[in-house]
Length: 291
Image (cartoon, rainbow, N blue to C red; front, side):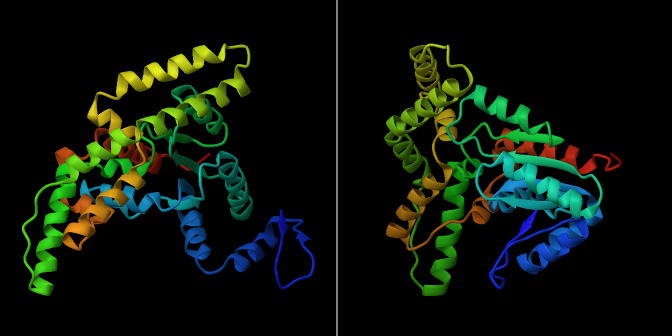
């Protein structure tokens, strides 16, 4: 481990684990609560960006407060899809604590094929006890429930009216906006999946004819596309929410947030994959740390 501090003219190699405290001193106070939780629980959940804000909200929605409040594990943020970064962070954490930890990783699928997702998950299990990769593009796709979005928007309009005295009636629009947006992205999504699948097979199975790889990918898209729910798993959830909020801002001067959508969501509307994901976290949180 090499410590780089802008206050010094040169970097310094750390020769033993006791010096790692200096690393976290440089990183700042935000790291201290994470270290405290890691020392207490000996469990680390690696997630991309702010994904746990959505995961935690869904957990509390279903009464899983212990999961939602991360009582039995620490959440460690990894910027972007980076399994090697997870490996390095885990090693650094274990060196700092002087003990092994139980680890789990939750990663976005983006436009990777099923084969690549499976290969990545298998590779991650060499250093992570639990690994899952979303079947949808990213965690925001779990928020693309049209009825819940419409209820959240309606509530915002009522609140907005109380504050401004301007009362507007809301016409449900989320389903129409999502359908229009998803259909407009078919060519882009297809090209992304083609690019990713070709790259993966060039790197891992160079003898396979690229035309067969492309044919398989195109067949997958054609098979899934007529199903609206499947289509909503393929698009960018982040982009879809931006488009919805642009529409709401233009017509009603309001916007919806992940929290407001989840608050408006009924338990039976929560995607089944999210419920499976929370079961995954329950198993992880209950895993013995005596390893």
